[in-house]
Amino acid sequence: MNDCLFCKIIAGEIPSKKVYEDELCYAFYDIDPQAPTHFLVIPKEHIVSCGEVTAENAAVVGHCFQVISKVTKELGLQDFRVVSNCGERAGQSVFHLHFHVLGGRDMTWPPG
Ligand code: AMP
Ligand code: ZN
Image (tube, rainbow, N blue to C red; front, side, top):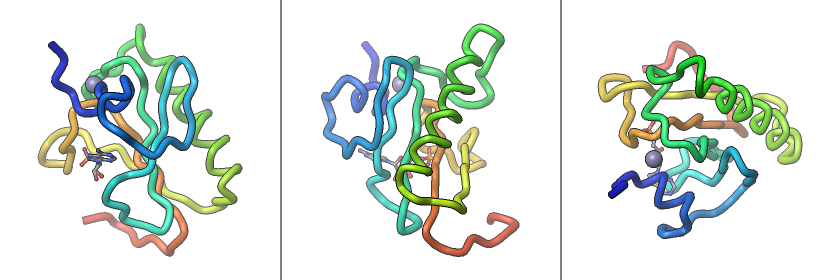
């Protein structure tokens, strides 16, 4: 039994506001946006985090970035930030690999 929140979103068991979908990945708006535009891109395959990327599953990660490039263009986002929190101490709360895409405001560095 898969208890993963994002696997349930992919399966349509939990509603989400879809931005993009294909056979490999799904993108949807974050429920608690941290910028005027904030969406998440996730592989449909359950990968826990960037720390679990291997030679076997790395292609889908590259695909996620292709999707980020395509969707940000479609949304007219020229400047944006891509973030993936890996592990609890880094701020990860959902243990299914996801890339936050944030834009529409000035960003600061370093992040907290
Ligand atoms: P992280 O804390 O980096 O693991 O990111 C998880 C993100 O998922 C957070 O930004 C949450 O706001 C977001 N989130 C949690 N539940 C949902 C949901 N049902 N729909 C959309 N985004 C969600
Ligand atoms: Zn999952």
